Length: 113
Image (cartoon, rainbow, N blue to C red; front, top):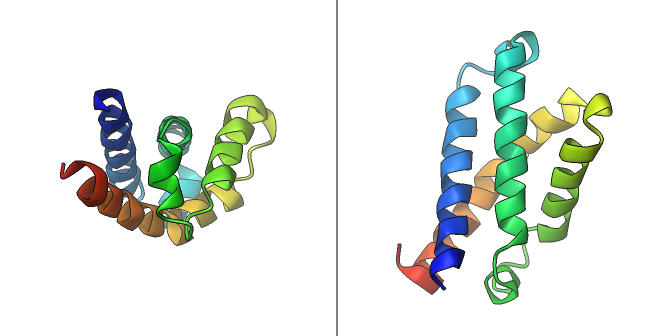
């Protein structure tokens, strides 16, 4: 159980970092290679931690496409020469907040952390 909590913390931390790195918006993200690298790296770490969450926790939130998150990590890590920044930005802009909400709910439901 303790290890599972570590994954929740990693996910929270990654989401927070991504939000900080992208606070200046889409144009800065597209213009700044360091921001792109930081966001992509944190998406990888976050997605790997998602993969390691207990099934029970993920099943409690079917609104999240957990397998797609894991698949996205694999694409970022293994197909790094063909990363589409439009897709990365879309994930950050349209899906990260929903995941953040689910992670906070999981924390309350299963950990109280």
